[in-house]
Image (cartoon, rainbow, N blue to C red; front, side, top):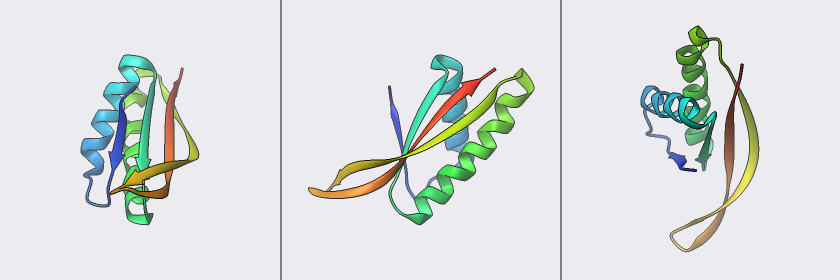
Length: 87
């Protein structure tokens, strides 16, 4: 599965569209965010995506988890958000 990597400069509307597409395709999407700004954009995107899929009777559930990520050869701890569709 493709992991959406979110930065503090990510456009929440664009990310929400990607989430909605992945959820329609496989009932699941996954995002990675490192830092408070990136996590803020990711959470906004989940809220917007819920609005995109709600008219079809689908509810999105977000499961947070920690993720070890390598950035420029350095190990960092990020947040992984797993989004699942629930009918």
